[in-house]
Length: 437
Image (tube, rainbow, N blue to C red; front, side, top):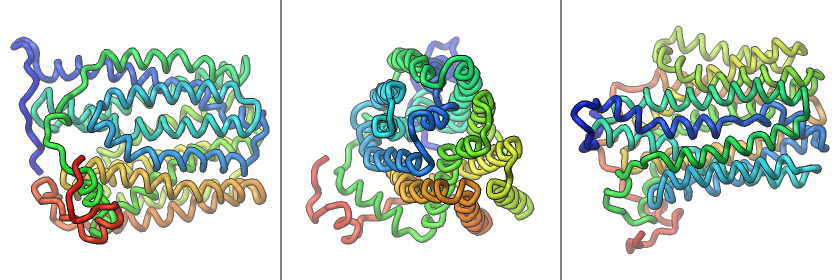
């Protein structure tokens, strides 16, 4: 598929577009790095245990922010397109800072759940916006999107490096001091990320295109997600991949709690999990999932790693299994993301991606509640069978979409998006008359 071309930004003759792009993205790299320095994350479950959480209330907390994200995610994407993507990223930093402060001040379960609700605002505002702002910056600076994967990969690497380093430092400092202090030490880094975002020159491509009626756009997006048969397995796989990752990241530390692991081990453990976000991106470009042997190996290792979580009582073995599972799911999810974008035209691509993200969070909500209850009354190893079931289903869908791809590339950018059907209009509240945006 030919990538879109736009006029490039005017730069001095002595400055190549590549150098100009790198310089322009530098404040964004700094902002993402500072925002990723979350010292409290590796010891969160330990802190929650100290203030009265059990496995069931952890599930309630996870479901609480999972309920907030899908409500805000699609509106935040619309806000980013119609107002400012940089502004939405700044709002995400403010939300994260407020959530961290409330979390550090919490002495009981209800107060900490409030911090989780605010954290959901951060997730919704950040998710998707960072991809869109990097994509448009690449278009403005180079005239096409050929280097987008490389540039977003670097952003993900910076984010992953920050998460890994903060996990190691946070776990070490918490062992010397207290988990609560890690919350307060995180706030200054988040505040500095706002300054870095303000220094970033936001691309303006999203403000130059003609606006379409809002309700009609929502109707077409809804129809694309729910009515296109070729897209449904891809959407389902994207949701399952996101679900597995969320469960591992959210509930994975419960294995360490159940096995009475030392507080100092939480840092290296979390660093290993966070490293999968960057390493999975590097691995995704090397895996040929359209080859049966490669696909079978990936799916087999995913299922094997999930099975280890149901039987192993060794902290090291459990950690390796979780890291391997997360690494392979991240790599597979990037493949799925490409298939998703290949299958839809660019004018509804962000809306479809946001809709899939919202569905993922909606699916996570009941899963988290049930997982928490099973963990509380039957133990995390029994609850691990839920991860295994989701992994097996994801493996079957991955085989279907990876091996079942036809020769078509998604001529999606040249194809017109389908007109909304009456059912889609009704679902989105669209009447016969177009409603101005």
